[in-house]
Image (cartoon, rainbow over all chains, first blue to last red; front, side, top):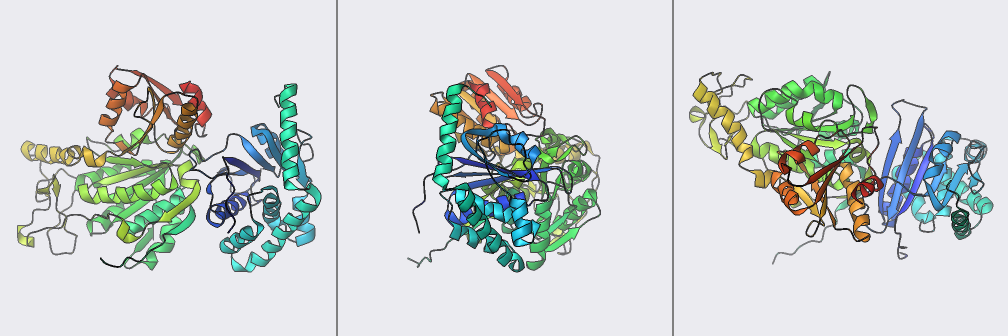
Length: 208
Length: 381
């Protein structure tokens, strides 16, 4: 097994609408990074009292050392799968953080420094099942995170999901990984660009 | 030397609620009665799955929270380790029977996963508004043990402690957690059964005809015979004598009431559990519990990194109140900060213990959001 990369504290927020499977996505991501990869992980969630609809989000914190505060304050990676979620949480993104959106559902990003893929459209057109949206996002996120191993992610999907939907989700995961590689570019480049923009913003004195 | 097989504990990525259920099963819980309510429902779901698969495990979904409490008391009297779990509105309903459990000295564990209140309030948001209610919610003067947990591993650990204290002191024990702790997922390793200390109630040491069900056996606690064992069991919510029959004779009433308090008050060294972090040289202390203790832990680390002598006292036992540990801080520190997700339910206790010695500051939040490390840091610096 590869030696674990050292992570100080890495905060991810998965946000969107109830029913998009964000809490399941957070659970799979957390399960894999904690048990498969071996990091310290906390996963928390926030949802409304409604049975469906409303806003929904899951937060994942990853660290090589013990995690005291389980929620997020300064996001390294914000995933917004709806316009309201993007508007509400963009301000929690730290300088040098990356914003990943569903490019069909988020039409007006609050910044021009963001990356996007049409996750919902991909789920409908390429997989033929809109519910696989969250697994496609997981594929893209795995591409973005240098410390995440696609092989371990696939194994975790198999551990958590019921057998009859595993094949479909592995397909969705691979699609997300592939699309991210093709359209978003190399992961280190994405983070470097974000970091440079963060520095620039700081110099120009922009707050938001 | 005996050959020791190296064992690997099973690791799971689980919620606080799942850890509570795991802890209950490890502590020997064989009876659960409940009525589902967010954010405690997962405890009930797991007990519903797991209990029927254990030897003589019983799971009941009752018609409401009052009945659940009654069923758990009944099960406890038949010798079982019983539990029920709920949240604010259900906890209100359970109050009268919590008093009954205190009166008949029925060991059991009541888990309250706190959410925003009063009334239906914020069903899916965290709060710490039921702290004083856990202490004083039921009528009449009574002692009670209230525990809390702030992390997923602690949820498992404190549930086992709750069962042990319930059995040891023959009292209902309340485990107060909050929505954040209940729904946070973390890695926990499940201890093997022989790694844990599991206590059970004291059994009668005399034949049935000599047995006095409410006579002190040891430490102020009477031995407890299970209904159906052949021992006389008379159970009543009326104040009773050593035989369990109603009495209003002042001497008998006084003896009963003082024993009820004494059995817990004399064992503070065992009952009061706190965690001290960076307190040795602290000039500024934070006193916290539940999920806020995690924020405080983070804030203390940040403050220390900037050279401030800050420490944290985490209360794992909320009641009886950890007077000795807090008193020490009141003498040692120049400031004490009590952050909590209510308008000041534990800070009230800290101020009472402080008695004017040092400066007590509060940080309160009642909007359904956790107090963040940066808010605590801002209050400290």
